[in-house]
Length: 218
Image 1 (cartoon, one colour):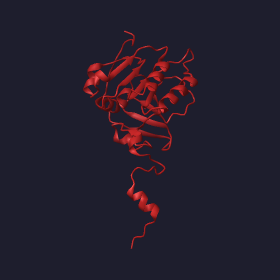
Image 2: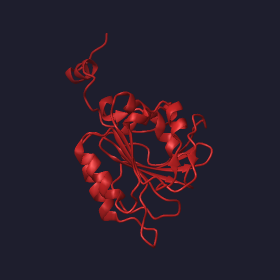
Image 3: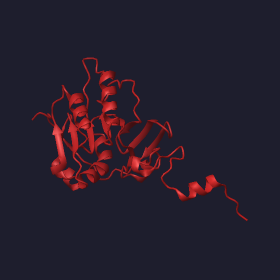
């Protein structure tokens, strides 16, 4: 005979309770990569949080990693913002990946990239922000600017992805996730709050979105 406690019955009947390690699905956006979703504590990209991406070189796969989620957001009529991309994203490839270009906004200004990202998050209108911050002469990004951006993200449900320049020094931050991205679909989880702290993941190199070499100001 099976004997259950009142607490066990409650947990069996309710699917909206946080049980410690994983939050309810509404707090995450599917990455579009099952192998990655299984490794993240929320089961996807955390809403209203800061995610740091450290590519070994620009175009190593940072945009490809985000595209399934970004495309889904635009299909839901949520704007997506690219702020200070180092190269010009190829519109034909973005469209083939499912991204609605009418929902994509690109801010080319590099000097005020953090300010622009912060204002977009505070508006509450965007689905996600992807920013490529540029450091000072020492290639170091201001930790104060990152903290401000993190606080702006937490006031809404849109994730903000910071793609640091190769060789730059990421500031000390409270980012929910920090991922290293290497060519060929190799991802390493460097930080994951509430889940695994480290670990390598091999993703299939499909749906690659090439970047067109050239100045973002062109």
